[in-house]
Length: 434
Image 1: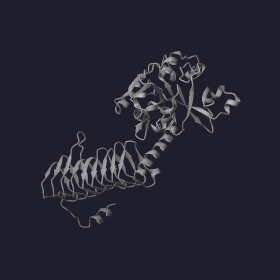
Image 2 (image 1 turned 90 degrees about the vertical axis):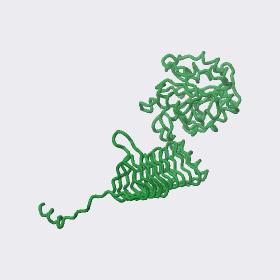
Image 3 (image 1 turned 90 degrees about the horizontal axis):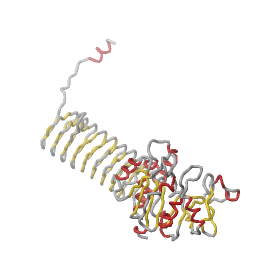
Image 4 (image 1 turned 45 degrees about the vertical axis):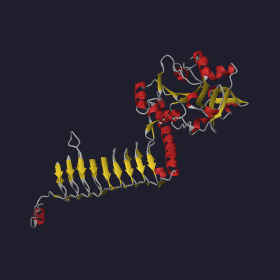
């Protein structure tokens, strides 16, 4: 089915009170992106007409999604006068012949998981789960392959309670079905809300065929609490890491590794245990060692760590980054930085060695400044490079040097050390006074 035949509506208007948070439920993150982002991304792969219905924190939700997408529609639900899932559809005008209605709290949905809604031809397709323990769910009564009715648990008879088939909350409607029944919805119920599920009962009275579609719980798992959020994170992380390993990435103790959804890992990279890789990082034929953190950075043909921290906008190529080295907005090409250094707002060229304890002092409390280090430079241990500073090619910086702003010219040695003084027998004299 092509994208021009399917419209998707994502219901993202709810408060999500069970999350116990000041943040709208659909904006809570799963693997580095809001859960609503994952649903929209999957939807755009199969539809050219995606609408998100918003209400609670509507400006914030829309602004957050517009950071990532410019080809979706937003509809604001009049939640005060038309609450509920049916009310959410009041002002939606899908342009395609089939309309798939998704919930904004199902971040594990994939295009593949929605395939049955696309290929099944029916006026109404209703998703169902088959649960061992259906307690708390409304039961779906099916006869001869079609849905007869839905009954809430509190209203179910003993025979109906034996049914293990429950409503998964996702529907596909022919467009004309929605146009006919949405205006007929009533809020004459205990919650005084307009329910999309009422269309099922009305359509059934009119002999409209309602086809059940069995879906798996993993992909259609709803997130209603922080516990659900954590459970969904585990599932998505497993998917992300499995996909990378199937493409040839080596992972040691993968259950200890965290990789966000937009990360790219290429070639036969190695990711050791307890590594965290976030943002839009790219790991290309690189070795990220145990306990290291990589944030929004590029690492190519390099090894990093253990216990290193690449902060955003680090670009590391053909380089060795050792333990307890931190970089930020730094470009290192063909460099060795073995241990215990901070390299921020810097460019370091090939053949250069950064000794232990070297710091680029890039921030004066108001502004940040850049350090430029050329080729084949040897920076001795415990040196401070106070930016802005430029070190040309083939330079030596003696250990313990504090280099202030300016340029160290090619071939030179820079050294700044206080003259050594020794005071004879000072130790004994000092402690005699105590």
